[in-house]
Length: 241
Image 1: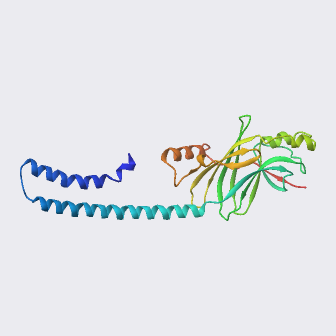
Image 2: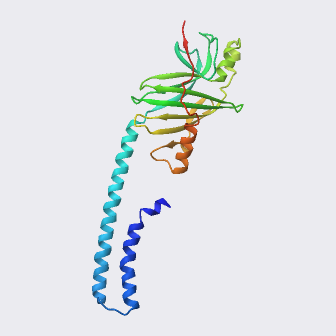
Image 3: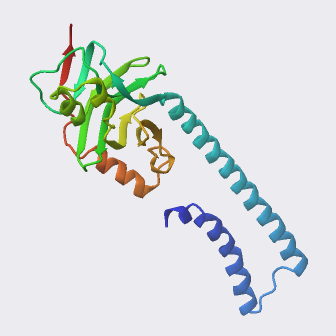
């Protein structure tokens, strides 16, 4: 109903003179000639069209400026599935671990923020082939930085002694990935990805951007993003030689 409320004043503006004209006709009161009424309606409708045009243009300009402000703060990033030895440094993990074998190949995710925009309160929900959901919470990803992420499959491989052939035969079990984050302008965004033959590809149909979202999608985004009352960063393991 809200989308029609913006036109109520136009409707009211048209109803008032129409009601007056009908009332005069009913009571057989002739204040204006036909030519006068035509002149009146021409001027009146012209004024309404002009006002509506100015209103529409003003609102369109405001919307465009707002979208430009939000879009300039949105980071550009990509997700990749890595099949190699993790780099030394920080590794975000989805479960507590006592030991990670350094210097061995494994399968893990990497998120690269190759823009200069900050990503805040980042949440990754990773849906696996065996219907398990791994969740990783990252406080912030600075522009130009990358983050290594160990899913549950990482630990399955970590706990096995595999040779090169056995490792190469393992397929990544990440099926779908939802990424939630907040931009520097406090806009919330949800982007969805799928694993297609070992490569991560975006799913435009599942994208939800707060400033553009319809009410149902916005409620969905807020409910999914705020499922946990307090944001708690996932455990970080420091990989060292």
